[in-house]
Length: 171
Length: 416
Image 1 (tube, each protein chain N blue to C red):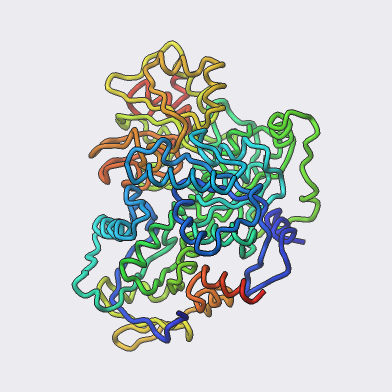
Image 2 (cartoon, chains in turn cyan, purple):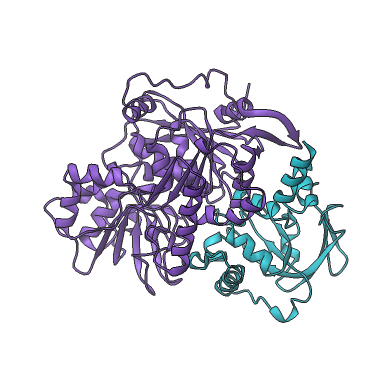
């Protein structure tokens, strides 16, 4: 558990206002993680992203535009991303429920607008949540604003449930 | 001085703990619909299964109501067993859509802090609550602790001025706002509506607050007024409802927006975004095969009354399918008493049982390839209501009924 020093991986590049219904079509709602993951596959197909599972031995990251994850609160979309091997997310901005759910499930997520135009689908990037930068494969670094201490505490615990356990043990 | 009523409510519920910009707050009530509750049950059990206060939760079986697949039947079974085994006092099975049941019941009053495991929980803000939706893990935290962590949002004051024309509904007001500011135009913000002349009925306020989330808002609330008081009096069966002590401060806003109700035209949101909004005049004539009047946004008594007014002594267009879902059993019964259901049936409409149904692509009324539907629901995202090539237009129940009669998108003023 805890935040890794850096997260490296290949990028799925998504546009603006990618909502949870297209990311994870509603009929893939399930308590079965395998089915949740299939929903993300269907979403990527509809978004014309090649999930390129062949290379998934390496990490995967998402680079999304504005208002990422708008719409439904169904956490199956985020659990599906986790099951698909998504290690981190950078977006220009997040929809609030979706952002909370990513952090709650321990998926490092941060906001950066500047980097958007420099990254294409399939590129390789490195993300340091601790130091607050994203690095392109050519070595160029983009800083992002420091994580809120509360968000950091949850991510360092490994998600909201381990955070709750710690909190409970502490009291 | 606080950021709006929202800031005041957060301060009032804060327990003194702070991490970064987030405050730990006490929660007054939690809404737990079947699918998202099912997602947290195994973790709840692993944490010991203790709920902080059973009197402060409402469990509903409304999404998979009744279930149409074996997996959903098992989810419903698990949710009902959970409620029975734990002796949850408020558990509602197939009685209506969770958001509607939440405001029909005796629990909420202005100034409360309310969470729900569903994004449209914002709807309860119409009663002057701070109400917002969260994912299952957040809700699990609240079930165990009675608390959540909130970042006080910026607040936007929205002044609604002028008379409400007969052909304008709450749906048109929120679509106007979404069209002007876009999907995500209010990210992380709280919207606070001032109906200065008290002209907007509570059913319409519910529709407005329901859809603030489509603009990215954390919550939306109406400043409590005489309309709120009347609703609470009628709901609770007495005339003593008070609007709470909150709202006496001096709320500050980061932005102020005005909407002149009297000059609004009926609105339509085009596929595939609730913020892709035009006046009905600009899209009229678009051919549709299905009209859906229902959901937590558009299935209330005023929606059915409005639809029945246009459908009376008329027939829907040849080939048209008109599906009507009252948002709750209570609304269903009132609609029978008032004759709305009879009118809708005579016009050729079909009544489905109160539940989420086609809105979330769950069951009955799902769209086939290339089909087009006009819906009074809240989201028209690609593939939400069926085949990814289908198209959904969002509008008020007046525009929906008018369009069911002609088979194409129609301005209700042409039929009224």
